[in-house]
Picture 1: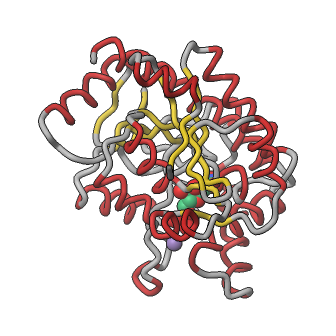
Picture 2: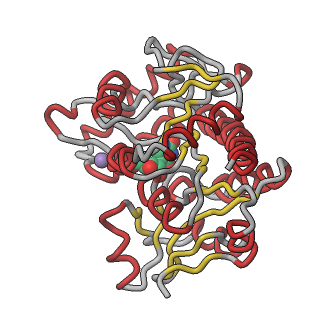
Length: 302
Ligand code: PSU
Ligand code: MN
């Protein structure tokens, strides 16, 4: 048995109750301890309070777990040598009995394997700045083009190239839906200069879009870009300055590949004196609420 689904989640999926998948790289690599545990538990409680069922996904000692216990979340948040698991790391982690935290791409794949259609996260990976030289394009974008899961995020972080990320998603046939906004949110800020494909105002309409897409046999995910609440949206100039500094530091330290996103997140936190982390936690909470509402509507019309 490679996959173990928590009995509560298994029963919910079988009874067509609303389940929201959650990734775990955000816990192990995206935030420091103890904020990471607090965030993970808060997100689960938020989804439960909206009357949906949270399913945090990770690989624990080689077993793909759908629905972590509080203990497992705690361990993942503190353990050393947790692998950052994207698609290409899944089989290695399982066969070597390793513990790994799943990124958006791996979490989407596992969610689809077990029949979960809605997934909440902070930010998706994308096309990195300078990708024309480094080829650094997140696996997340590829999986978004292949896997039938609706991903609720706060748009695209400006540590990435927003314009190239949108172009890539267009090539791959992934719609980018702005939730109650015409502008692509940029994670720490509630908007950017880029437009989304379509703006949709209600969870029910998003649920209808999911149903239409997949009923027609159009394979692939949907990006729902949900702006960070205005009260927590960061000053654009300050955050761009922090990101610029972080990118310079990354280059100086020759940070590459899968280490770059965690490095930049932690540097931006340092430079903004922890403000970026507060924003990060608030936007995830906001996404968890929207994802729960979408999951509920999708179950109703399914
Ligand atoms: N953005 C965040 N926090 C994160 C990540 C992205 O604000 O923790 C993680 C997600 O798991 C995402 C992954 O799938 O980083 C993308 O990594 P990469 O850029 O190496 O593809
Ligand atoms: Mn990469």
